[in-house]
Structures are given as structure tokens and as C-alpha cells.
Image 1: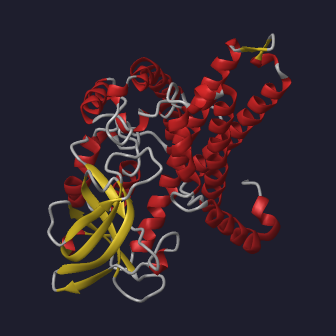
Image 2 (image 1 turned 45 degrees about the vertical axis):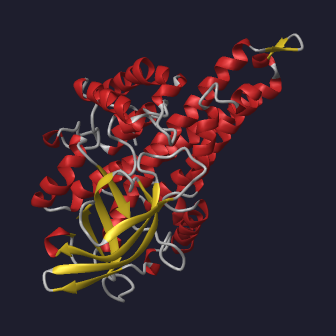
Image 3 (image 1 turned 90 degrees about the vertical axis):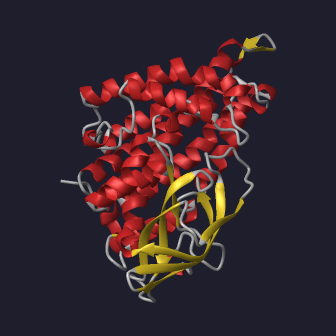
Length: 399
């Protein structure tokens, strides 16, 4: 692939960087900017979103006819990295999970009438959304075939019963994509549906306390005790739930990597600024060999993650499923994020461990990176399966 960005994408990247530096990073130091769950407050979010829209930086992943910017996945990789140099960035540009992945998959698979009803309000930013798949044990998590929540057809409606948990954003979502079991077929036993928050027959059991910080709407446990969904709100065909999940997670996993690279780079920015001026025993920290080794190692880890992420993005733009490339990026970037923020805290000392910087926020957030959208061990198993199937062709060049 060509590693040069097009002039259009480069302009978007620079404009986003300028917006983040000018509008968002200064907000992080003000306690009034945060809600009770350590994310940007709702009132402030609305004003920042209005500014992002006014500057033409809204919903980069959506087509222009829907109010987005129509960037390819390679363009998202370059721009999402810049967005998440601020902890507030992605949600301001309408590029945060789970809305980001939900919008992308609905644009790909929904009918036009479904897009008008279910997708467009998410693109417009008038409501948030959630993806409802993961279940408490012994239900499905990384293995969707274990899903136990059922949808039983009764005439032109489906009746849903079961339990889900760690559903990101559910506490504030208006539209939900639900994955439920509709048969015992191991490959075609799942089906995807849409439902609205006001539909009867389901409720939020609790907002699960986590290490935090949290996305808006938290990570919730849901119970379905007779939710009825019209068949017209089914996504794709009966039995296509696993297919929809794979379509969604391919890009969604990679957009996580894009954003985490931004947090990684921001952590190193804070570290570098500190060691430039901090003196110890008559020597600037930046001049100590041990510090130089730490920063050089972290910088290299970020670059490896960027290359893997950009390659996977390019493959997706070519129509490839890029499963192997996405898994590699997911493992590498999750590890890189932890390395970078841990290094930055170590170099900042007590300052890094305090709330005087955003490093402790990023550190707590970073721990989930090796878990969400498939634990690192699951992705390594995927890579091993490719290795067993492809043998030496695992490392083949594209020609």
C-alpha cells in the first residue's frame, strides 16, 4: 500500500488536530467539564458538537448525503488518531463507540427505510445507540454461538426473552441493535433486530460499576421479559445475526485501535513535555539514557501499531474482511496503549499518578483495551488458526 495520505484526508487530519488543541484539550483541566462518570458533561458536549458540525468535522465515517464526510477507512485511521489526543475527542465528532460501529454496520446492511428510521437519528446526533450482544455466563461473549437470549417468532412479531450485560451506552441509548438466538443452527442460529428504548418488555437491571472512566450511558445489564419486535425491524435475513456481527466488529475493532493510538501519542506528549524541563541530581530527565530508552521503546510500539492499523484499514477499503490484520492490530495497539501511559506515569512520578494530568484517566481506561471486542488471547487464537491453515502463506505478500 501507499503510506501517503491524500491531500483531502491530510486537510481533515490537520483541521481535527487544530480543533482538538484549540477547543478540547483545554477543557480537560477543568473539573466542571466532567459528568459524574468522568466523561464530558452533557451540556458541554452539545456545544462542542455544534462547533464540530459547523466546521465540517462531523461523522467522518458516514456518506455525505447522510450529513457525514464520506472518508474511507484509511482516512478514518488518520483522523481518529488525532481526535483521541483528547479524552473528549471521539464523542464530540460523533465517532465514539458504540455509535461509530453501529452507524457503519447499519449503513452497510440496513434497508433504505430502516436507515431513515434507525440510522439517520444517530448520524444527526439526536440520540445515541447501543449494540446488545454480550451475556452473563454461561451465555455468549467472545463466542457468539453461546448466546442464550431467544427471539421466538409469533406471526409478524418476535418475542425476546433473556439477559445481556456489559452493554456499552445502554443507559443513554435510544436505538438498540439486538443479537438473539432464533434457531439451534450453529452458523445461522442468530438474528439481528432493532428496537427503541421506549418499547415495553425489557429494562435495565443495573449500570455495572467499572474501574472507569465510562462512556456515556455506562455498561449495563439488561433483562428481556417479553419484548416484542415487529419483523420489519429485523436486520438482514433470519439467521444472519452472526454475519452482521462479523461485519460490524471488523471495522469497529479497528476504529478502537485508531482512537487508542491517539491516547498513546497524547500520553507520550505529556511525558516528553515533563522530561524536557524536570531536573534531578543536576541532570535534565531528557538527558538520562534510561529515560531515552523508555521513550524510544514506547514510540516504536506506537509506530508498529499505526502500521498494522493502517494496513488493516487499507485492506478493508479494498473489500477484504481483513480478519487477520485486524486481530494483529488489536493485540499490538492494546499493548502499546498500556506501555505508553504506564511509561508516561513513571516518568511524571507522583504528578502522573495524580489528577493534575489526564494520565491516570487514560491508565484506567487503557486496561479495558485488552478485553473489549475480543480479549487479546482470543485474537491470538484467531491468528494461530490462520497460521495452521495457511502455513508459510501466513506471511505472503499481496501481488
